[in-house]
Length: 216
Length: 241
Image: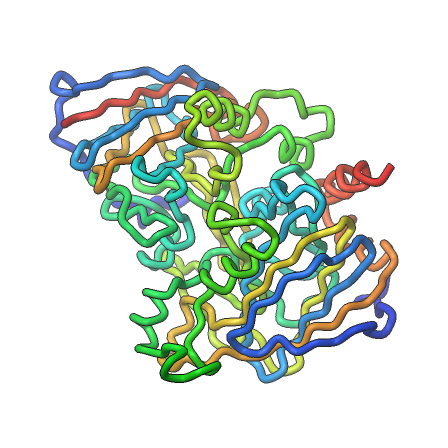
């Protein structure tokens, strides 16, 4: 897969200056908050890990990340440095300010027990999935529920669209130590599922931990 | 298998004018035909399980299980519960878009200028977000249910540099799309220009809606188009054991 369109922008932030460092093990959810102006880094520790992510406005969690608005405003299929993540109310939630991977997907959605039965086999229903993690994270948090789960971002996932309109899940272009950084433009809730999918190459068939770092 | 199965004659027909919005339950075994009357139509579409409306059209699931970004004849539209809300049994336009979404009032104003009801009466500028919200509200649904929408009749290409390009004229006068419901499906429609259509004038196109009855055989080519869809139909039939 060509990476010629990928833009790579590294960050000068030092891990030692971060106000929060948290490793999300493979298959776990994480719910966090950012205040406007804070920067979050998602660090792919071992490479080719899919990090399924949703953002919500903290002041009104019904306001959430809007993938179609985000794509049409930037006129480009992939998320990378400079991408503004818009909400369903038209406001900027976050901006991608650094990205050493180069492209991230927002068409492929999250894996779920139910979609796994369709994609792989009816017997695969009881494998762990991102939607299970999202729901668990939402319902423990209490501010979010199923209705709030729209289409998500798949950080580090490589899902090209062919000229004929085909959608392919390619081997990742991420690698150990690659990261993406986002600046919060407003106070946001971050909901992450560190993807447990074992049936396709989005995680190189081997889900691994990722680290979250936050700077003031 | 014939290229295009002919369903029974339309039981009911209705015009969806340009700018209009409409919602209804497409019952199991019913088929909806949408016909582009003038060419260049676009219909933003949402779907729900009519009996359990927390089950919603999930475009990402629909795309990835069929390895496609466009949706056309032979494809299925999946709910988040792994069921087929509708199968696209016919499509002479050849492409429906899953990327562009709908504009809201501020975006329509920015693109087409002022067009208030007070000024233009029923020729006022509508917007897809409000059109869909109004219909969602009629069924007790709300803003959280305005998920990614499917834009029937429209085509957006992804270029080599991953740029998005609207393809004008994808649908011509007389082109039609048929949706077969293998379960009771709430269908929500808004007939407005595609958000990435560069035409500067607000000029939404009308679509003729026709409801018919059809047997499950009308969707056999959808069920058989990939192993995933065979499993999707099995999941759907379990609702009706």
